[in-house]
Image 1 (cartoon, chains in turn cyan, blue):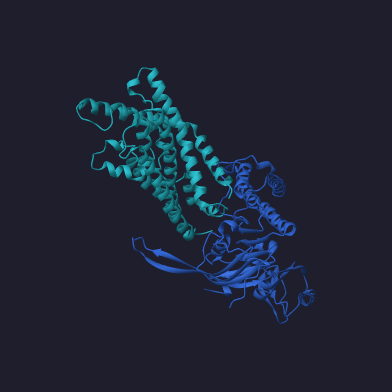
Image 2 (tube, each protein chain N blue to C red):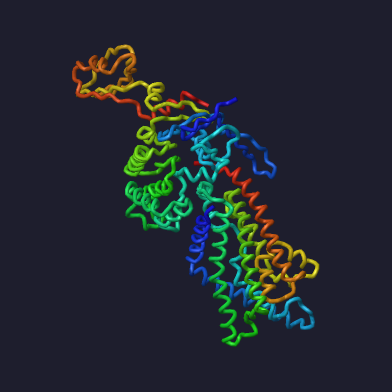
Length: 274
Length: 326
């Protein structure tokens, strides 16, 4: 089996992701804005209750927010746009006509699209919220450096797993789109789930004690929450190994389930008309 | 025990059936109803033949095409294409066929034609030399030289269809499936597509399965016509045979420089229209051969001109469908 088709699918979506430079700048401005508002909210909450022993320090909560904002486009908010278009126009039949493994073909495209969107934004935002903020004297509001070199390396491994996990969840939305022949359902379901359960809305470590274990073991935590915890060096119940283990578990489980669902979908995909 | 399917044919289909189950009503647990799209069709296409596949909308053509392409699983029946069962050997099967759906696009809107072809090269694993050769040959035959660097979204329909056909052939498929390849095209583009398909079949021995609603495509290309209706094969014959059995009658038009005279016509011929300066006669050449009829009317006073024509393929097909109602 040749890897070439999958690299090609990856390269195409990566290029499309990078093509929209204005969207990158616009997204950056929006994320800076939301990040700043969130930070101010945290600052007032933390200063209003200095005695409470929060699971994250103010600085950690701010760093969590910055990383979360910079990785916003890494979240599985909906299906791959190209698959949404193909489902609407019917050219999705051509995807079935390619001599490729459909799962790997769509997965590599979905991963490339996520990375092509997220990587430039993340790098830009990290520069602005990190070194640049410190230089202009906003050090207290800035993105803190990783807890240690080990944390930095493990966080990179974890974010790579997180990206793959996100692409695997996007595959679920892709299959949903192929079944319903419309991308709308995937966005309606995907966006709220991803924003809420990834910790984008509120860092998962800041939820009440009783719900925190559930939030940690659901798959969306593996996209950005676990990598950020490793970066910050905040304790994960069971340690870093549990964090990485959860990511790998969900990757394997969702791949297995997704492939089954995909096979069943391809068998019944009946594109009407023409 | 059944005899095994022949492997010398490019396409073999035996007793193919497909039933769709559709849900009626918008409720959560709607009632389902079965729709029979294919009700047991059998045919085979030898290597290198152009077979036309025609039938009214909803006849089951598209269902059959999708099953042969490997993107739809039949309810029952046997199919072999290039010796493979399309839906069980999907990847191996689709690597050896080319498909054009006239109403859909396989090229990428955001890429140029040339970039799209290069992507397909990678997807099908075409070696660089073979790709360069095929690309040059297709660009020449389909007149793509000027549009290789244009974005697909900027192409006219005729240009896009030529690019689509090139895209379906970049990996040298043994079988080309064309689903309404001339839909919406202007006359020169249609002629170009037909000429290309003809050459492809003649020079490279590619087997072509063609569906169309444009009967001129069939007349120009297909050595053989498979007519499908209500999920069954209604006719499977060379086009001339279909013409003979369905609508063998011919038409003789006579023009006069004055009011036409009254006619007495031999058996097998009848007057079907009368205008101030012309008469139309419909006749059956098996009863009264054309030369005899012409000899009969040739001496009429005031006759200026006469023309003999055959019914158009559209008329033949319309008659054929009418003879095989639901």
